[in-house]
Length: 267
Image (cartoon, rainbow, N blue to C red; front, side, top):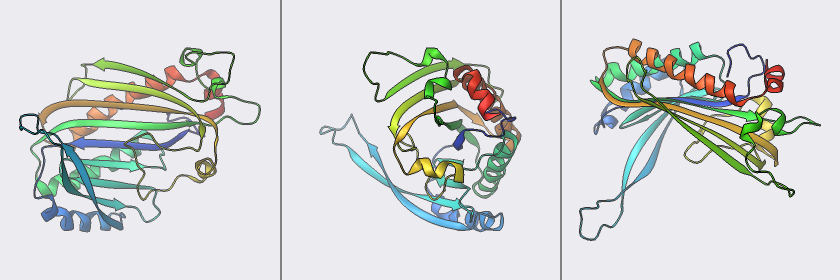
């Protein structure tokens, strides 16, 4: 998480901005794709998704599925890409380098979309980082995490566990209120992704790929920080300011979770 870490444990990161639904998004997709293609996001794919909707005012109350398109624009090396939906834009990467580059790439992509469809408001801005705790020979996950995250311990083997912490803040520079959710997963399985997260066409860095194919004891630090509130958007500088604010608290949460051994190993 620290920008100074030479062996950073980040294996996936995303940033997302939500906005009022653009029902005619398909009309703009070709134009957006052409700009992204020229910027190096040459792989293009369309995916259909289902969204569950329940009308509690209806007599039967039967759930219905709303089918909608999303568009993937991905670098040819599959290191990063954008996902465009009718109500949000996501930038994700499996080859994270540093905060400044990450935020810059996302803001440039948002500008491409905004210049095409002309957004007036945004309603959600968020960042989420996944960090892999991969013990080496003679180590355990507990060597990398502070003792307060260990949870309940018994005299029998712990197979898996999950800790979750939720924090609130109202100090955002653009959207004031924000929520930070920090989770620590411990498991004896392959390195994967939490529910609701998919790397899509992206591939992991080489140093993580071997852990994606076999079962082993490890932990994942999953920190999600997002702000919600309808705000008029006048430029990408507002998005950049909010993302820097979100990242600062996200980084502080990461630093509060890891041990000194982890810092020494990853720096």
